[in-house]
Image 1 (cartoon, rainbow, N blue to C red):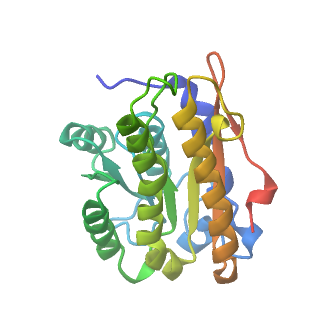
Image 2 (cartoon, rainbow, N blue to C red):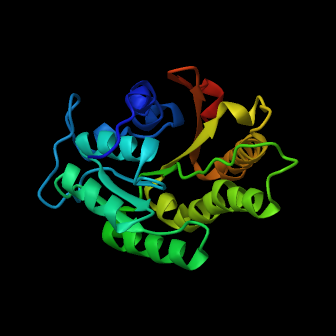
Length: 244
């Protein structure tokens, strides 16, 4: 039985805020463009008219919960996973509505193959939403953590995110899509024994700011959603300033 994360529920429910409210950037909303119902999206036979989303790190944790949520709303969900077991798990849990691929986002070749597969399936419509969610955590004192472990976290949390975003930009241009980057409280408030996470999430937030500025002329939207963990809960924070 797959592990569940009840503390993700509030955060996952908030995903509707940056995805559905596209009128803030002078675009037609996902619901209007797709012709889907207000209360619940219904999948068509082919799914070709449904909005699409690609999620990195969708095989477990928050990524899995987001995949389940969006599949339930009728999105065509694509994602990366770390093992065939994760792929099979989500396919079974959603009746085949989520298509995961085993891909290491630190491997540029694997990223290119996954992105090509997704964009070929989407065709001329392009990708509506990219959620850059994949990330790892390397806790411990900086004095004792190996450089290899710290570099690995940067490869996943920063360079992997860059590779995926850049690879999907042509497809996102086609649809006028939206990019959602999953940040963390530690990116703004560094914590002891959490140096790699604090620094990689700070770097991700800086890159999100740069992407927003660079892509603004093309009517992109890049949203940074910040997951804030407390003692036993996860809190969502979203600011209007994250919209163009």
